[in-house]
Picture 1 (cartoon, rainbow, N blue to C red):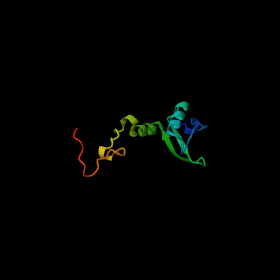
Picture 2 (cartoon, rainbow, N blue to C red):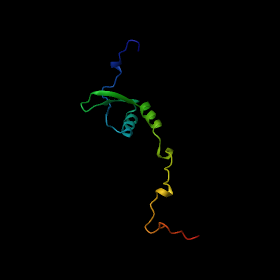
Picture 3 (cartoon, helix red, strand yellow):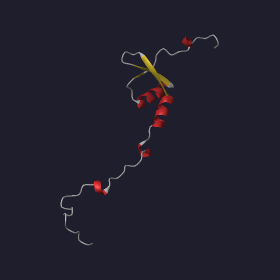
Picture 4 (cartoon, rainbow, N blue to C red):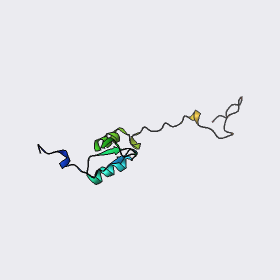
Length: 97
């Protein structure tokens, strides 16, 4: 292996992803073709980068899942609209409960 050139072991049918390919599709390509990375190409098929399994895992780890997000804050009672006719009129006392 000391004197071998990379050209003697390279793959000539290159699996690639286009810039707008969804992450899930890239993960599928990596798995299907049993590779750990893909070149990313632009509309003219020029290589503009590389995406790897590690890139996808790091992104996934940094993106919270829906159940990891903080709960929504319920609106305050004062912010909740009341149905018509339920507001006390100015100058009238509320009936004692």
